[in-house]
Amino acid sequence: MNELAAVNHALPVSNNIAPSSEGYIKDYLAKFALDSISELVFFKDANGQVSGTNRAYDRFWLEREAESCAKLSWDDQTSRATVKRWTTLPTGESCLLETHISALMGDAGIPIGTIGITHDVTEWYNTEQSFLYEMERRQNMEIELAQRDTMLQSLMNASPDPIAIFNQNRVHEACNQPYADSLGIANPDMLIGQRLENLLPIELVERFKQSDLEVLKEGKTIRFVDTTENTAGELNWYDIVKAPYTDPLSNTTGCLLMARDITARMHAEQQLAQANAELEQLSFFDELTKVANRRRFEVELKAIWALHLRQSSPFTIIICDIDYFKKYNQLYGREQGDITLTKVAQALKSVPLRGADLVARYLDGQFVFLLPETKMPGCLHIADKIHQVIADLNIEHAKSPISDKLTVSLGVSSLIPRRSMLESEFIALAEDALAQAKEKGRMQTQVQLLNDDYTPTIHASRRGGVDESN
Figure 1 (cartoon, rainbow, N blue to C red):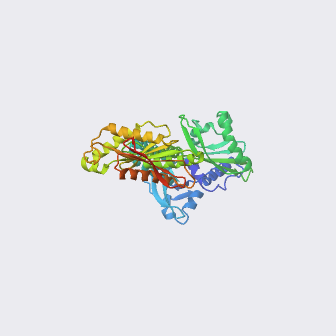
Figure 2 (spheres, rainbow, N blue to C red):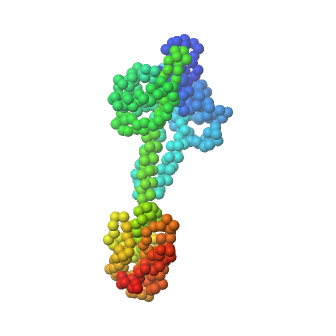
């Protein structure tokens, strides 16, 4: 079919062709296909006058012809052009349209007009913008995401979507090159007059057959996402619509297939999901000290609290506060303070812990231990080890009123969760114990437990690892 015939097919079926003729049927099917696709299609003659449009075009530009895609200017009538511009939907919403304009050449090689096909690429544009936003948040992924964005842009400017028509016997009557490519077949002519059973592996045939029969036998319009391998052996994703049609003259039925290549979108979504997962992982760690942060501690506490409440088993919280850390920063500077925080964090991580135990940064000069299945006196042994690893650091602290070396105070709370309590009350017990440790001179451990009547009591006091309880 030459370009002039393509223009004729965009217009109403000619009355000069016999209804039973093959030409009439082809014209009818071609017009049916044009009116069935969601893209906006227009034709211009050699004088630049609009000679035909499809149904989607007419609906979209109803009463707005002056601003339609057909009004786009195009100087070189023998080449192709792609134009993007923002406009509004009939509902008033903004949308980005991409119009591909091509010359229609006669048999003598003389331009006889142009054809324009317009796609709404707003969703693709928004996906790209979201993708770029995630790139900015992840500098270490910047190069990879930039490459993905380039690929996405290339796919957005690729060939028109796959389209095929086959009859009630699933014999192809028409298809285009993108459709052939989507099936891994080099030439669409190889499909005309053929059933897929004659060309594709049986597993692919059976997969396509189910949806074909659903359309042909039940008369349903269906939409689904599927994957195929193209001629290069690459996996492509397609958003596929299959719709039934009936020839009013012969009363024969068939299926119209239209597909949108969404490979770039799927890749983008996978990359975004991966980036989000990595960002979520990073959001659980303190950037300076490289240990878990307070958010991670609160998430773990909530989960462990629920588990131990069901199992009626004990667990412990230890809050570790660097003594007179504000004075340390004032004397040695904030940069040295950050170095010391990092050393303290790594020392605390060296305290022998089990797989479920957690050490996290709590506040500026505070860390917190979450110790499942730990009770008295086991938690005091952990507290003693904390004092020891800090002492082993041997960090000078000339402004400390209690020692010439860096020391810590510990507040410990250990209990079996009760349904009448909240996690925040558990933390409050450890904070109260820490306050007691500071009040009694720091460089020590205070343990606070609950009595049977739910009143708190100081259970043990250890100064720098030495037991001072009564």
